[in-house]
Amino acid sequence: MHGDRDAFGILATRAMDRLVGTAGLILHDRDLAHDAAQDALVRAWRDLPGLRDADRFDGWLYRILVRSCHDQIRHRGRQHWVEPSATFEADASQRTVDRDELATALGELSPDHRTVVVLHYYLGLSQPEIAAVIGQPIGTVKSRMSRAVDYLRAELAAGARIGAAREGSA
Image (tube, rainbow, N blue to C red; front, side):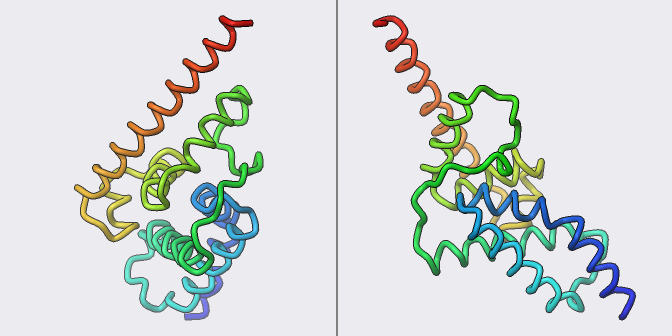
């Protein structure tokens, strides 16, 4: 049992930045992201004896993190969108305008839709993996992903049309 606790400490230390980054994308608030990541690690520590398959540690930990993020949202109400810091950006080389437009559109998604987008595009999880993490059927994941992507595309296209109109009038 002592070895499991030592291994947990090593895995938790390695996962902390990714947990905070993922929570930041879901919650859009650095302080709440740190709180959610810490809460997830405390819950994972407490529930460690219940982990039956050590090979599934990452998925198990992300499932706990998503629950912690959703608890933060429930307890504090839906947060107004706060511009994420560079720590939470998946690709810092993108143009600032595009990144800002994407961040704004992402912030307008519901927490459920934003969660599937973050899990897929930030963590690279497949739809079946996302279904396991959030505890929803695969059909729900596919529906949320489709609606979220359609919304993001529409918002970015609208932003591009507005930008082109501004350039044309200048």
